[in-house]
Image (cartoon, rainbow, N blue to C red; front, side, top):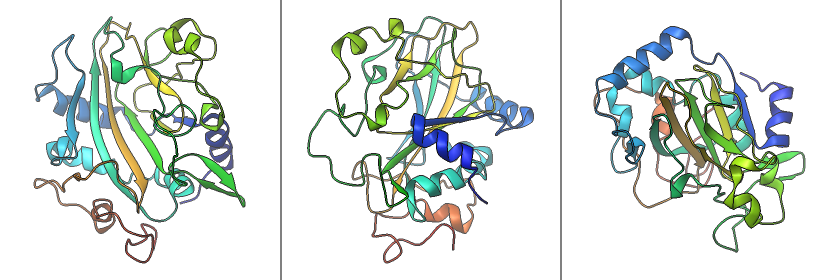
Length: 262
C-alpha cells in the first residue's frame, strides 16, 4: 500500500484530490439502495443525514458503510497527511435536490489557517510542510454516490488556499459563483474526494435534476478531537481490528494511540 507520487504532489499543490473509480458501479448501487430505505431530509430542509458523533450515525446502516472506513484507496493518502496514528472524528451524509441553495454552513470557509474564524491556531491543526513531511491535522474524505462538478454543483473550493497567508477577500466570499478562483472539481459517482480542512471550501448550489448524495468521513491526527463526544462503534456490523482503532480516544501517537499500519 503506497502513495502515488502524482497524488502526493497534487494533494499538496491543490489541497484536494479526486480519485475516480474508487467504488464500482455495483458498490455505488448497493449503498444508494440502502439510503433509499432510510428517511433522508426532505427537499429544501437541512441536507445532512446520518451524522455522528453522538452515536454511530449511518455506520449502523450496514457493512458497505463500514467498508469505507479504511478503504484501500484512501489509506495511503491519509497516512501521508496524518501519519501512522489517526482517528475518525466525524461523519455525515449530504443529500441535495435541484436548486438547493447554499446554506450558512456551506458558504466558503476553512476550519484552520488564515481564513479560519479564530486566531492562534495550534501547530498540527493546519497544513504545513517542513523537513520533507506534511503536517496536517484534519482531512475530509467524501465518497461521491452521484455525479457532481461543473454545471451540477456540490463541493467547491479555492485550489491552493490551504497555503494562503491572507483571508479570503469579501468580494470572493460574497459571490463565489462568479469568481474564477473558485472551482467545482469533476467528481463522478464512485469517485472519492479528499481535502484538508485548511482548504477554503464550500457547497455550490445544486443544479442537476439528479439529486446529490455524498458520504463524508472526517479524520484527524490521534491526539486531536473536534468536540468532546465520539463516533460510536456500530452494533450491527463487526469491524476489523484496524477499523476499531479509528474509534479510539484521543492520545499521543504511538505512546497512547496505536499505529494503523503496524
